Length: 499
Image (tube, rainbow, N blue to C red; front, top):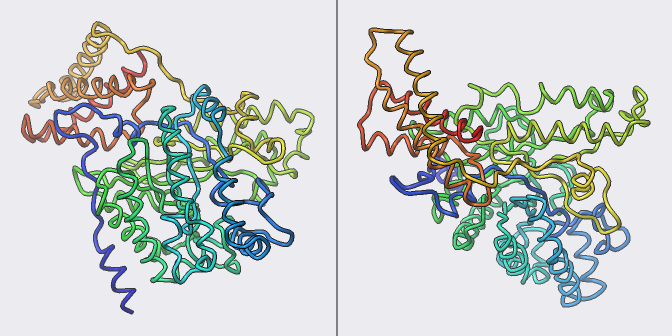
């Protein structure tokens, strides 16, 4: 009962993020990393092992990381096991990998981590990994030195994905430990409190890095029609992070129902504030029985209507990302409509359609699953293969910034159109059209600062618009026509992108 009350008190109300930019200030390198639109990839099977991707650390008869590390410790001792695991982490990425990612316009990596690796295994008490925590005593240090730091030197951000939670956030074994098909994490108040303590440490320890773009507090949360347990944990986890970092985006799982969590963010987001939360959706079209009944062409066509659609109030005020997707379509689908004979072309069509829609709808970015495999390549699961095939396309990156003449020309055009429309719509209304102009200029300046950093684009538009709106109110006062500033800000981003 005490744990339940303690957890509930931690999440009784949610601490909003600080404004993404201080009044009158330009975007910083750190704020750009945290807010730009990303073209990313997962570093799967490195810190959270998956046998089908990298099998060398799995002794015979083991299928999940807990079983594997327990058996390796038995066979080699703790020191031998630690050496084997550390070699795996250290050797996973090399200089050529980082150069390849940078050259192919990758802006971010999502790194799945297990709770057992954070701060050298210090958050394993009472968990299944407690007996083998010594194997992981250097894991956190290696993560920072071999992933966070080299990523930053190549202009790449890191999304810290707590992929493995104690007792499992879902019934699958890809979170490191088998839980008998049950998502035991949601039933354990003490485990949730343990993770909140861990998130507090992560927020404090990583704050010094500019290129941490977010902390993901759960991967693929179990679906719940009534998500009270998830809501309680999400609130407590967000507040724990905010104790040490008021800026970092906090990523939550949508539990396979994005609209449910879009409404939750909207309902908890105070007027003039951003909660600082990003909703993670995963796009796979190879697992469900419904998808297996469709041909690849039909799957591709249906993306228009079933990928991040039908969101409450069109997702206003909500930042979305797709943390996992691939170009894989099930074998049953390939048997339909003669698709197998055109497989290469259809894979490219499917991947490009995803790329197009994700660039439009996943405002925070998207992360392909996954980067590399131990043996050869993973075909349609393999990022390099799909990029080289042209199935996965990076975001359009501009190499120059439009000059002041172009800005003035665009502003004059849209400002005149705005004034003419509303003056004709209601000639008696005393509009404040200068607010529209000021919104346009604020957006253009922000977009320019982002573009000067490796051609970046603002992805989390709402927090920036809200921050600049509050700045505008302090300078020019409030009004019933603040909507003109907001429309101007939106127009400024559109015109900058099209110039």
